Length: 352
Ligand code: SAH
Image (cartoon, rainbow, N blue to C red; front, side, top):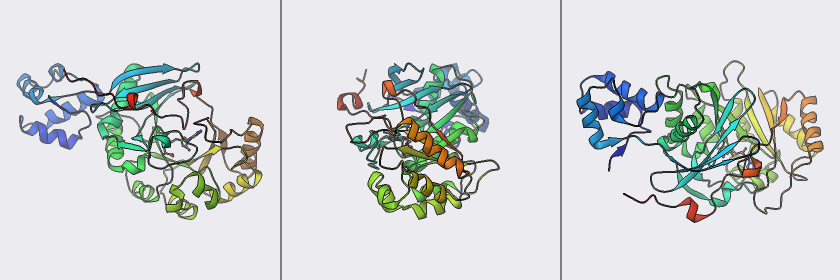
């Protein structure tokens, strides 16, 4: 058994390499082979001295998550089931758009937050993903679709609450945005949170950091407590205070995601309250049509009413749009990522 180097930081690789080589640039070369050139065979890293390659490969290897299942939607969206080293599985989604591709990746297996309209919540939290497992989803999808670095956007909108797995998510973000790593521009990466305020405050101090999206979905604490129990810990006033304190880059906006649930949060008063919460914050509102999760009792807002809700925001000078539904026929849409079958979730890879 070799130890997987995928996911190790520049610094960790330097330490590993220093055992075999006194040249710091060998670690930098190794880093760039692993993340920028997506090489998984140490022996093929042609600019490293042969004895170094041989010594490393005795103890170390490089491996990505394994593609176990691909499901392709009529609209071109592809959902991947990826198998991890411990036999557990996670989902990631490839979403082609007119001018760009978006990769939607997971930060946890399952999720502990219990939002009542979301299918991932039904899994509970199985475990956190490591930085390597998070960046590994990107490596696999980029390879599958021959994506050039910087040819795609990245959204932490798959399974899990990224700010509840802060250190690993940030470590992955660094591998993904390092020019010698994946080389993705930080402004092309969006992290979506259900509103973990301490995480937002911590993120505010990172440089570079991903763009921020916040899943709001209710405009009163009473309703939000019910739909998104995390609100009991971090109510609306505190959440918006943390957003007002977030230092923004020029032209940067925060996205508010708002799942439209018929008769629950889609009335005229909701639009009015949403506009006043937004205040003068530079943000845009992304209205998400509810995707059927389980038999959870919710229904989608009819398109006509969704448009009226959007127009009510626009008339109050709040930029708003309705998110196009993608991959709903393969359960790859927002809120539909879940592996509820234990046999699929956990199916250990037989050891050779
Ligand atoms: N935990 C983070 C990351 C997940 S992003 C967060 O909550 O932001 C997943 C997005 O899908 C969130 O905006 C969530 O509100 C939305 N969502 C969850 N269930 C949904 C459903 N059934 N239909 C539409 N959107 C849903």
